[in-house]
Length: 187
Image 1: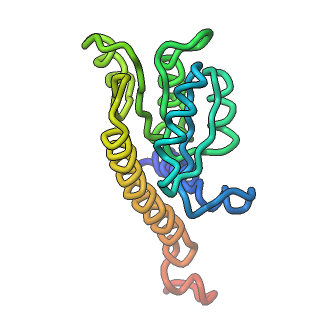
Image 2: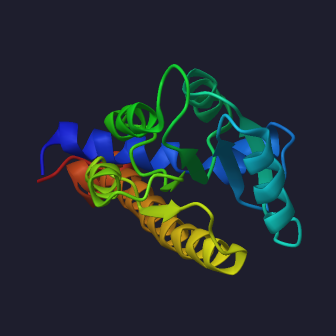
Image 3: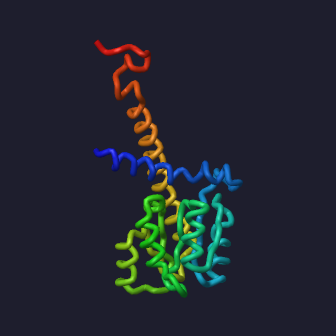
């Protein structure tokens, strides 16, 4: 594995450490942050109602540009994304999230009233983790959200281990031999 690939792995791992960032920034680091992106106020209200008994921190925006800005600032753990929005649609938001090294593994669940197979396939091929057609059942939505968050948690754990391994293997004593850390020259 090349040094650039290792560096990219480390950068990706650091980008996944959003809980610690939110704790420092004053958010609730114990609860996953879910970002709702939809142009309909009624959808925001319904999703927040569905999640009120869950241990989620929920924030909302109403357009794609605001979503990308908030993703960069708050580093959410999951994105609930509408497809049809004015300006930048959900497909474009998902494409940009997947192209960004720091957000490429952010779970994305599309929520859309569009039930055509071609739309679902397009969303999934862009990298969405799931595609749910409105109207949806709250229990099913929550199960899919929890499933995506569990997968992200496992990925975060793996990334943390990779960072630890990277720094352990990159230490001077490892690169130069055990004598280097004691100041001894190799014979």
